[in-house]
Image (cartoon, rainbow, N blue to C red; front, top):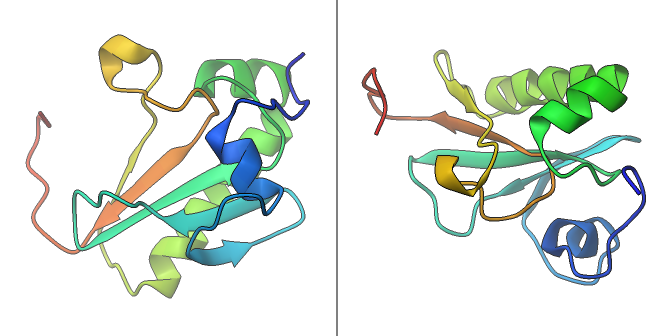
Length: 117
C-alpha cells in the first residue's frame, strides 16, 4: 500500500537507518542525502519518508508531502549555495528511474544544458 514502508525498497531502508547514507538534511517528512553516483558536483536526492513508487503517485495521493519534497529540494540547494540548480523526477524505468520510491534529484555546480540527455 502506498505510504507504507516496503521491505525490498532501498530508500525505505535508508529512512529506517538500515542502510547508511550521507544525510544532508532531514525533516519530519523527508530525508535528503548525497547520490552515490553523482552526475554533477552537487547531486542530492530528496525523498519522502513515506513510500510512494513515483512522483505522479506521490502528487496524486499525498500532495502536501509532494510539496514538502519540493520545499526541501530548495532548502538543499540553498544549503549547498547553489544559485542555479535543476530538479529531476524520473518516473518509470524508461525514464531512468531505478529505485521505485519517489525522489527528487537536486543537481548543481556545473553547466546543465537543455534539453538534458
